[in-house]
Length: 333
Image (cartoon, rainbow, N blue to C red; front, side, top):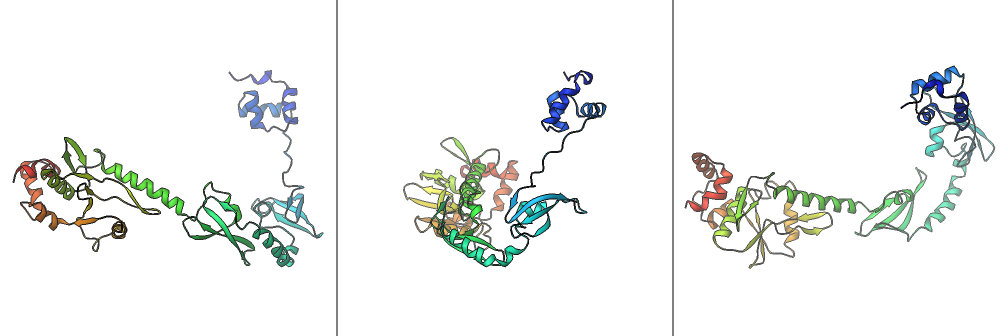
C-alpha cells in the first residue's frame, strides 16, 4: 500500500536530494506516485540537484571540454573545449562523443605524421586471429583517415574490417559463417515442413506408414518402387555441397547406390533456386538421375499420358487427386 503523502518528512526527501536522486527515483524509493512526489516537492519548496555534467573535464582526442555553452536552435548541447595546442573552440556534444571532432583543426596539419606513427602500431596486429579471420595486412584510407585490417577468412576469402569491428562479434568471418548457418536452418526447415502432415497433401504408404512428399510425380514414382519391391529411401539426407550450399535428393535406391531427382519442369525452363548448379556439384561424388513426366509415364507403365486425366478420374470418383494417386491408381490398372 502506498505511503500517505503527509507522513513523509521533509528531511527524508532532502536526504535523497543530497544523494542526487531525481524525482522519479525518489517516488519509487518512497513508494508514492509521481504526482504525489511533485506535490511534496512544491509544498516543501524543494528541487532536485542537477547531476554533474559527464562531459566537462573529459578528454576527446586533443580536446578537453571546459564549459557548457548555449544550446543550438535545434536543442543540441554545445561545449567550449581547449585544444592541446592552446586554441579554444566550441563544438556539439554529439561530435565529441562520436569522434567526429578530435582537435581544433591542428590535427589535420599534423595528420601525416600521426598517420605514419599509428600505421606502424597497426602493423603490429598482423597475425592476430579473431574468430575465423586472421589479419594479414593493414590498408590505409587517406580520404577517411582510418585503417582497414586486411583479413583472410578460414574459407579462403579476403575481407577488410576495422579493428574495432573484429571485437564486435563472437565469431567474425567474411560472411560465410552467417550464410552457412542460414543454409543449415533453411534446409532443415524445408525438410521438416514437407514431412509434416499438417503442411502437405501428397503422400504414399510404405510399410503401413504414411510418408508426405512434395508432388504427385513423387507419389507415382514411390508407388512404382513399392509395387516392384525396390528398396528405397525418400529424401534420405541433406548433403553439404560447399559452404552455405546444401542439396537433398528425392530418392535413394539402396541396392543400386543411386539417387533419383523427380522434376516436373526442366531446369532450363525454371530454376528459381539455381538447383541445376547443385545437381552438377552433387554429381561429382554421387550417381544421380533426373526423371521427368515422360520418363515416369514410360517407366511406370501408366494408363494415361496426360497428367490431367488423373485429376479427371479423381473428380469422377468424388475424391481428391492426392488420394487417387496415393491409394487407388496402382489398384485400378
